[in-house]
Image (tube, rainbow over all chains, first blue to last red; front, side, top):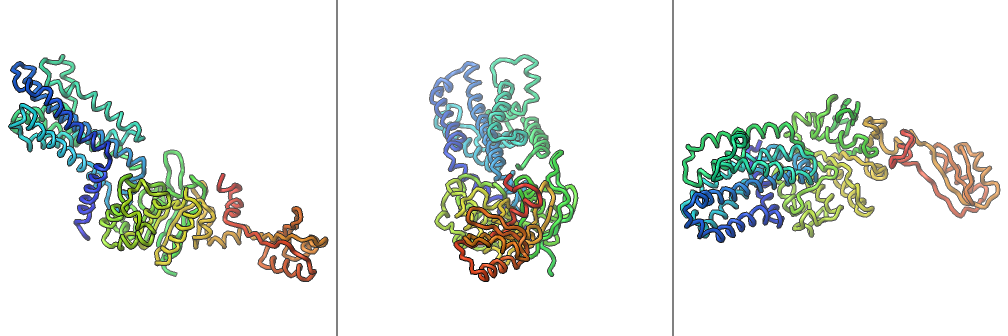
Length: 254
Length: 305
């Protein structure tokens, strides 16, 4: 038996899905071009003031803005996955692929890989643009920040799989995904705010997966070593494990 | 007789409280086109998907080439080709990309370009899936089902939604598949399709097989009546026909007489009678019962209901 066959299928389908994604103008513009453009525009608008400002709020913004942009890239990625899985399921594409030797795991891993590759491309483009326009971008650890974003995206993609599993139609899956993820944002970004949240909101934020993504991303952006964020990494891995387990029980191919 | 390619024994499949398939048994012999026929919702697709290994029946046993479709799915997938009902591909996948992807998944494949040529899709090689017509999409699905040079092909409601011309073109392709020595297992609710294509058919209704045989065998057993329609101005024609041994009834419609009866000699007797009595005939035709009539007889309703 050819042991490389599943790997060949995985590579081929991944490359094909990337090409298909790029051919979809709205998806490509929404997921890659707009986040990068928004970051560039905001950087140009605030750049000088951000660079020169010494007050607490400017210092917070210097870290906060790229982290917010990165989290939005991750959320975009997850919503894109939710949409694609539900559209593929509704159209019978998932079922058709499942009737090949590809195997269910390969098909799902392909979609995760495609989304992670596109996330990496987007964040690298954002960081390259940031180096040109953003005042605090010159000494950013590009590789470490990209890895942190990929880990965060990988973790919350599993939440996307749960949403894609439970929502029956392609029409309602992305709005529900958007609602679930955006409702996490006020709690997740609490650590970046220049004031403390009430204790009850702080308690809630500890149960929000995005909180750990924001903490990891802002720490790495500021040059923290990975060892300082092992708790965040562990939390993201646990989120992935739990959500993947739930999604595997709920997932429907048709 | 060689051992069957597919052997299904007493399978049952339910969805919640709905029994989709109950106590279904049949066999498919090598090299034949076998059709599972019945109205929409009768259990055709569920049965086929159980045989393909996409669904697990709660009861009963299925063997395909002696393998269990669920347990031995990997080994089986290399030997079968599948076309699913109402399946789609990615909207912006190109025809050649789909064929190339499918080809990369199997150890043995046929030449993809040649296959596209045989199916009349060469000109559409670089076209996106979303731009193909219904007939072209179905031909592409046939190409994907044949790319691994399978020994057995599953075709689920292959021509549903196609215009008559595209349907006939697909029928020719299915016959070509059989000519290659490949066994074909298809489902259809189109009785004409089953009659024209299938060597054997099983009629399924409410999840149960109600009979199976060759199309001609089913018609012969369940609808042995034949009808001869004769238009003649001869006054004694009706009474002379009624006197023939094979004739059961003679009814008149305008200038036509409808002569109904059983047996292979009916037409010969009517012709002989016309000749013997020198009756002048302006119209003569026979009406053969079809699988549609068999279905009506067995279930008490039309398959279109």
